[in-house]
Image (cartoon, protein in one colour):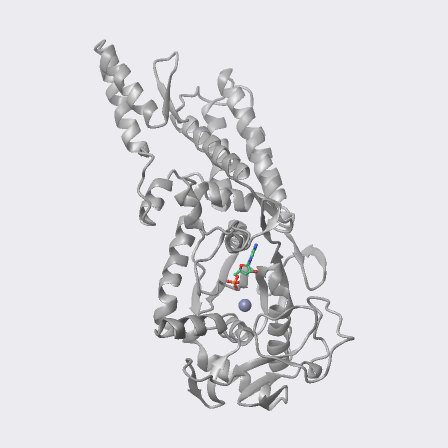
Length: 479
Ligand code: AMP
Ligand code: ZN
């Protein structure tokens, strides 16, 4: 295993990552705000954190990972009030949709999925702690954080505080980013809107206090890793630091990791440009969950990801190549041993794969190692220079590969069916293919070539190509 190095926004450097408690990583991810369906940009960030999570586990680390669902914020409250339903009722549909999207993208469930509205008491307690230390002041029923009281403010985002006006306040959680302001920890209720009756008065939490309170409740006062998209570094994460460190006096997070944004065809994704997509929009256009996961994960997280339909087609082909190769490996009949020592090549590829991921999660290098191996293994198989021992080593590579990339199981049709998309492409399962191939073998043995051709044609119409090997065995692959 290579030394793991990660880019820490706080230090501005790529540095060795060593968890505070040996063998265990405490990690927090800012989850979605469930006022609508999450979009592909959000999922770029969530696939990145999943790859990080999976790779940490592959390295033998135990994960304590919490991810929140922001199910109360300005937009949710306004939308729920307009729809005349409670906020829990309003958000439920989007919470379930988010879980379903995560399952389709093979995003592992964190150890703790937590909802903001289940943790109001922890937020109130944290605000009280800040009140006792004089980090807060009240105004018109709301409670604000006094950032002048926290000299380290700005250390994460390196924002220039020279122009800061003492006492300038902002109520909106997601404000314009040119300058720092005192932000609301607790917001006074507005007529007709949802609020909680608490020890610090009636109202509702600000967005930033949620993450501080929940992260510390589940993971302790100092976390190893905190992730999110780059847009969250300021003000959200800067405010999380101010709140948590103000209250505890301890470092809140040791390593902050931020994923760059996804652009669509070179432009910012926005509803007005008409280039705004949810996962479901893309499934509706016939793309598969595995191709989306691959496309989102293939670009290293610190580079902007330019999402294009061409790129998605290429991702579809890459996944098909990987799966065809895995099928060939399973179905092939290889001689015993290792005729040309190819297994050493597979072991080297595994080392390159690990080196790529250990280097700040360079997924492009890790994928390069996989495709080089695949090409060379195909050549070795074609020339009979590939034995069972080699197959074992290549299988070990594919297992490690898929622990992180999670695209090999051929389960797209089932996932799409779960999401309510009919398997319109007549997707055919490996079991069904094997059964038809076996039936065709029997037909050929009794020289029933009409039936044998019929089966070949039926499979071809459903996207499966058969190749008859010289030794009488049959290999199938998807077109
Ligand atoms: P939100 O639901 O707005 O709180 O965002 C959820 C996550 O998606 C956050 O980590 C954001 O930083 C991230 N995010 C939002 N837009 C994009 C984008 N275009 N590309 C990548 N990540 C994004
Ligand atoms: Zn957060």
